[in-house]
Amino acid sequence: MLGRMKAQGMTEQAFLVLTALVDESRHGYGIAQEVERLSEGRVRLKIGTLYGVIDRLAADELVALDREEAHRGRLRRYYRLTDRGARALEAEAVRLAEKARYATERLRARHAGGTA
Amino acid sequence: MSPLEDRYRRVLRLLPPSYRAEREEEMVSAFLDASGSAVDDDDAWPRWSEIASVAALAVRVRLGGAGAPPRSLAWGRTVRLTALAGLGFQAMMGCVFLAQALDVYGVLALPYANGEMPIGEPASAERAWHLSRDLAPALWIVGYIALTRGRPRVAKVAAVLGLTTYVADFVVSWTSAPEMSVLADWVSRSLMLVVPTLALLAGFHRDAPARRHPVRVTALPLIAGAALFLVTAVSSWAMVTASRSPQWPGVWAWVWPWLPPSGLSCLALLVAGVAYVVAHLSTPRWRSPAVPLALAILTVPVMLSQLSYLNLNSGDQVTGTFNAVIVVQLLALLVSGLTLAVIGARTLPSGDTASQAVS
Image (cartoon, rainbow over all chains, first blue to last red):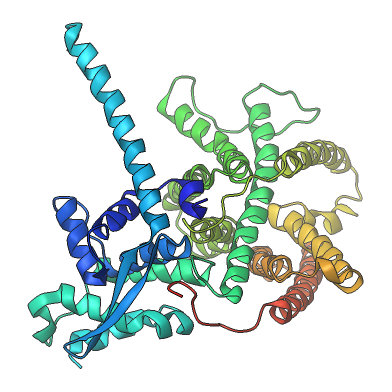
């Protein structure tokens, strides 16, 4: 059970944040940067929005606090993907891939039928 | 501390203290990292989009967002109940207004004359405008049904459209004869639509639990609306008959202040308030902060709306009776609202305990 994520579906922002944490734990700004890179500049998370997403993911136990560090005298909290988060991300990725496959197949059939 | 950091920390004061205690330092750190060289600029301010994101987060956290403390969860339930009850009332009135509109357009035939209503020539732009205005009450019905069936996004769209139509209708008529007193009265009365709509927009955020209510909750205002339409049809017919009597208005002067939407909602709020207080005193397990606080919140726009019907410029006996009834209504609402607010505040869970978001 994945709490709200399962009940309401995963938003693109949550999907990108989880994806940003797959390879390593990251701090808030690091997550925002990685999300922007993954989305090729399309999704730029504001700080309030980012922490709203992190709150939801943490409440659903999809991410967890990894460690805290001081950087230039300021607090940085690093978040990691939990096993549950990895499973949720994988399930969502499979779901999106299925949708993409349906679309691709239909487009292929449309082109083959000469109705473009 | 740079001026930019100081300004951002001031923005973060929108968030509850418990949330700030948990998150402020890392949010400031992330914000300053994202600001780059602007950190050293004494004239730099957080962008509006950053401020808006913090404001939206503050609304969610204060109204029961992810990891919110019990008190915020209770406020979230309160605001959602305010939206539900407010929309339920508007849906009930929507049934009445829709039926009256159907009469004006000749679809229904009521046993009394409604008078000539300007609806424009068939197939004209004026007719289209009147139709869209007269059918707009259906939006509140759609909004309420959507909300109770677990579709808050549809409800939000319907409520905002309903409110927009209401504002547009007033603007069109007011600009032709602008009077400040008319504007003030309209603003007071429009709060009965504005408050539930704002509660709907704020309370049903992404973290709010999606809930489908039983069908009877969906049906109740619609059935009540149909019954109310019959009551208003019969009472209008009785009023038309009584108006020919030399004793006119007689008892109708006492009844009239209860008939506008704010008069009916005054009656509904007083009955609901008394029922809740009795339940609160007799059945401890029914005690909840959400019900009394939602009723107390809804009391404010109803009082302001009823206040707008007070007429202190005329000294005739009928107006005096109107005013006396309205003053009694206002006093009753004041006592009821204050009682409910105190009960609600005492029932609220104490403690703005630390957020559990990252625990």
